[in-house]
Length: 246
Ligand SMILES: Nc1nc2c(ncn2[C@@H]2O[C@H](COP(=O)(O)OP(=O)(O)OP(=O)(O)O)[C@@H](O)[C@H]2O)c(=O)[nH]1
Ligand SMILES: [Mg+2]
Image (cartoon, rainbow, N blue to C red; front, side):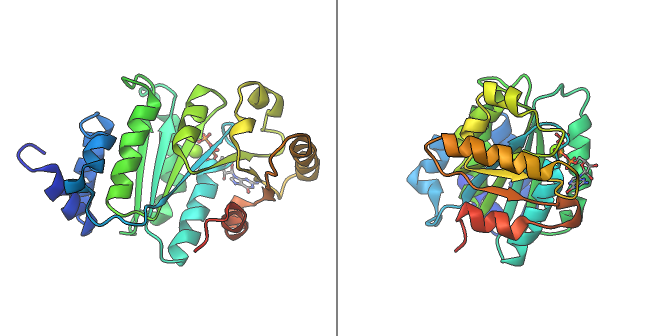
C-alpha cells in the first residue's frame, strides 16, 4: 500500500473495491492500522451508524463455522453487508481449522456483500485483541453492517475477543460442550446468548435444561436458543434473541 494514503484506500474499499479492502485488512493484521488512525476525523468518513460486532466462541467442532455461515445467509437476506473473521489460536503451520472454515463458508465466496478472513492468531505481537480490534475497526470503517468473529476453544483468546464484541454467543453442542471446563476458563460468563447447536442430536434437551438452571443462578437473563446449523435452522431465532434487529 506504499504511496496510497489510508483515506483513499478506505474510500475505495467503501465503494466495493475488494482488493483495496484486502490491502487494508492485511495492513490492519500487521499492525499498520490502529483504531486511532481510523478514528481520526479525516478518515472516519461517513460511518455514522456503526455496525454490530458479534463474537462466537465454543469448543472445537460444535458447529460454529456452519452456524456462522447460516447467520451470514440470514443477514444477507435482510440486506446487510457482513464480514467474518475466524481467529484460530492453533499453530499457523497446521492450518486445519482455517481450512475447515473456508469449506463451511464456501457458499458465500462469490457474494460481494460478504468478506471472510481467517487469522492464525498464535504469535501475534501485542496480543490477539490488538489485532482483532484493528481488523474490526477497519471493517466498520468501510461500512460493514455486521462483523462476526469466530474463535475456537475455551481459553483466554475467547475472553479477549468477547471484550471487543458488542454481543457474544457461546456455541455448545450435545456431547462436545465441556461446560465445566468452559466455566472454569470464564468462557460461559462472557455469554450474552447460548446457542445449543446440533439440536438434531441426542442430549440437546438435557443440555438446554442444565444451561437454563445455570442461568437462573446468575444475575443476568441469558437466552438459550437451539439450532441445527447443518439444516440451516435457527439463525433467525438467534438474531431475534440477540435483539440486534432493525
Ligand atoms: N448433526 C449435526 N452436525 C452439525 C451441525 N452443525 C454442524 N455440524 C457438523 O459438525 C462438524 C463441525 O462443524 P464446524 O462448523 O466446522 O464446527 P466448528 O465449531 O466451527 O469447528 P472448529 O472451528 O474446528 O472448532 C461438521 O462436520 C458439521 O457438518 C448440526 O446442526 N447437526
Ligand atoms: Mg470453525
